[in-house]
Length: 103
Image 1 (spheres, one colour):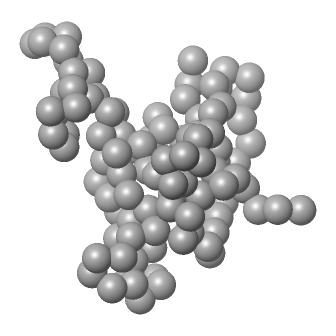
Image 2 (tube, rainbow, N blue to C red; image 1 turned 90 degrees about the vertical axis):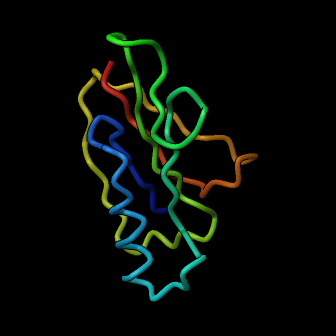
């Protein structure tokens, strides 16, 4: 059975700890990332919220690159209140990574 990764987007706070842990744990070079973290906001730059005060929205999404080896992949059970999706391969993402957002 192929390994799968489940990413709970409700828990991601955009800290890049997953990317740094991967980088250190695998001894990667400074410019080599197997995980990047995308900011879902206004699109005007990193960590820029969407909307106007006081109705601001922003979220983050770890993106597992094709070079990810699933070295510490963890699977979690979901209840029926999660929306599951995958990012299209055209974005250069690793296959078998499923994202979850509580509905």
